[in-house]
Length: 234
Image 1 (tube, rainbow, N blue to C red):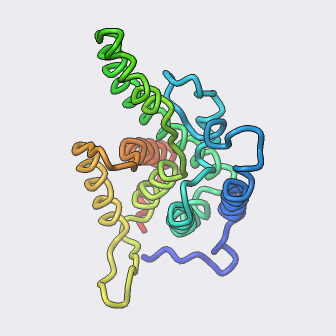
Image 2 (image 1 turned 180 degrees about the horizontal axis):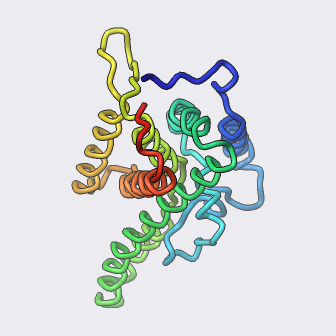
């Protein structure tokens, strides 16, 4: 059975408002960043607990910020594509809670990894001589104040829930490629993020652990919230 939303459910209310909010925040980023007396990135993007820039609200606000046009278009397209299916299935109020919890879960997983990575750097810093600490200070500060932003973690949670609720629904990426079931698309992305997180390449600025954290939280929520209705596989 294929899941096909009706014409009135193509853009559910929460998805529509999330698209609008993310669009307005991105517009503010590109038009007001140079005019405000404070840095939007420093104030609202996510920073590690060890950073002097960390504020509790960043766990939520970072989900509505994006680095560039490609970043927001990719995230918002996937949010609409998979989120519409899930919102139609769960209902708007439950979907909003689902989305926020996935985003928070992704952020906490990412922060946990950052904490342990940075602790090693901080211990190394304090083991150096005063002269070497002076040379190392700029790098350490840059590392601790690095910002994380984007809805990718929450979107990965939504993708995993779509794959759980509608595993056999198909996606068309191109007229030149065969369709692929959502469950295989989700599996491919999970394996890709696991591999890239393992590589931990220096030039890779994608928060793969956040993706994996959001995916894990999305799967667990989908499983427990739908635990008594597993007779239905679309």
